Structures are given as C-alpha cells and as structure tokens.
Image 1 (spheres, rainbow, N blue to C red):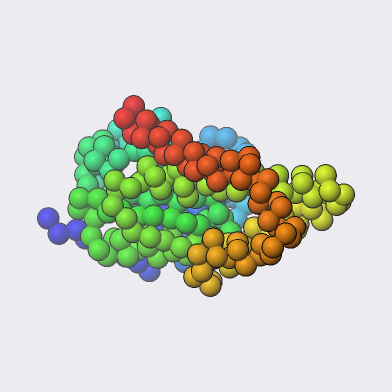
Image 2: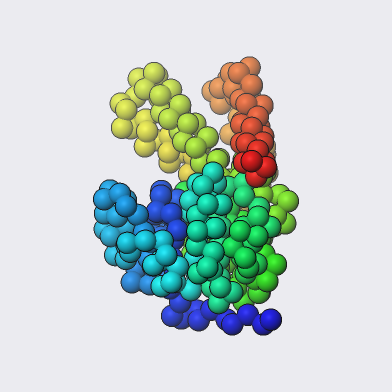
Amino acid sequence: MEMAPIPSETYKLGFIGAGKMAESIARGVVRSGVLPPSRIRTSHSSPVRRDAFESFGITVLPRNDDVVQDSDVVIFSVKPQVVKDVVLRLKPLLSEKKLLVSIAAGVKLKDMEEWAGQSRFIRIMPNTPSAVGEAASVMSLGGSATEEDGDLIAKLFGSVGKLWRADEKLFDAITGLSGSGPAFIYLAIEALADGGVAAGLPRALALGLASQTVLGAATMVTKTGEHPGKLKDDVASPAGTTIAGIHELEKGGFRGTLMNAVIAAAKRSRELSQS
C-alpha cells in the first residue's frame, strides 16, 4: 500500500518520553527554526520535566495517547528497557498514516515494527549535543518507510547537527562511539581542567581553556580533513612539552582505554537488543 506523505510544512511532532535526550532534540529543532514549538508536543507527569519543555514553548499533554493522536511524526525516546511496553500500549493508535521514529539504544527496527504492528519506522541514533546543534546522528529506514519519510527525518535531525545513513547492523557500534562518546569527552575535558588546576590555573580559566581546546581540536579534524595522527604530530615538536605529555598518556594506556570504552558501550547495546 502506498504511504500517504507526511505534510512537511504543517506536520506535528510528538515525543513519547520527555527525558533529557528528547529535550535536547526538541530544543535544537526549535533553535534551528525547522519547527516552531507550537508544532511539538510531549507528555510527562513530573512537574520538573513539564516545566523544562514548557519553558521553550512545547505543548505538554496529559497522556501519551494524546501525543500520538495529535502528531504526524512520533519519536519514541523512552528507555530501552520499557520501550516494548510503551509501544504495545499505544499500538491501537499507531496507524501507517503516522511516521514512527525510534531513538531507543539497542532496540532493533524489526522488534519495534512487530510491537507497533506497522513498519513505517525509522531508527535514529542521536546524541545529546543535539541541544546545541552539534549532534552526530545516524539513520536507518524501516520496512515501509519511504525515501520522502527519510528526507523529512534527515532534515529534522540534520537541523541539530550532522546526519549519516548506515545499515542497522552497525548501530551497536555507533551507539558505543557517538551515543556514549560525549560522556567520554566530558570526562576528558574535566580531567584536562583538573590538570590545569593542578598546574596552578584558576578553575574557571582551566575549564574554559580545556573545553575550547577540545572544540578547536575537533574543528581542526572536521574542517581540514587531515588525519588526527598528522595533526598530533604537527603539535609535537622534538623534545618539547607536547611529546612529554603524549608519553605520559601512552604510558597510561590512553588510546587503548578509549577504544575499550567504545567497545564496552557497544557490547552493552547488543545486550539490550537481546534482552
């Protein structure tokens, strides 16, 4: 059956689950101007979460049922452990007139489609920098999602950062890298700032320098196209300060530890998909 297109100029977006990730995406979408807050809705019983969304104009409805009924595109942003129960409860409302999107880590499209009773689904792995327009998101289309559906969601998530398309079989590794990766970088920024404080810098200056240094280094990689190893070599002059610091990082297993963190997060994503 041919899918009715989602009206790109007027569609309403609903979030099932009003946690931090949903808030990050909603804030980013509103900030980008792709959708006005009047066309976004969610539901939550917590006054704190309701206030968070209402503070930038999002409509907070009483129940998840109301969100689905009043939305053309529905994003499931609940925890992986509860997404099955949530989808099954809403199944009678999930017709193929609605485009369904899952951002639940470790939950496969085939399972979401089975629980929903329809396959007009798109799976997205975003990350929390959506809130500041710097997300790294990856998308995979479900069984009956059209290219037009994919374009609409690509525009939505492309408004809050960069978007790639990939085969769903790669999503556990993607979750381990870009889904969990921001937390690893926050730890690195905190550690760099602590090092600055230990070396004698005021806390505020150390944190500002650490965060801007990470931002600048990432921008060098994305803007120059140079391999990070070459950029590292460009900074590390013979017998200089940088190579002395790199030596300490190598002694501590810095690269291996980061690799292991990504692998551990990817493994946990696979475990969630099989539970």
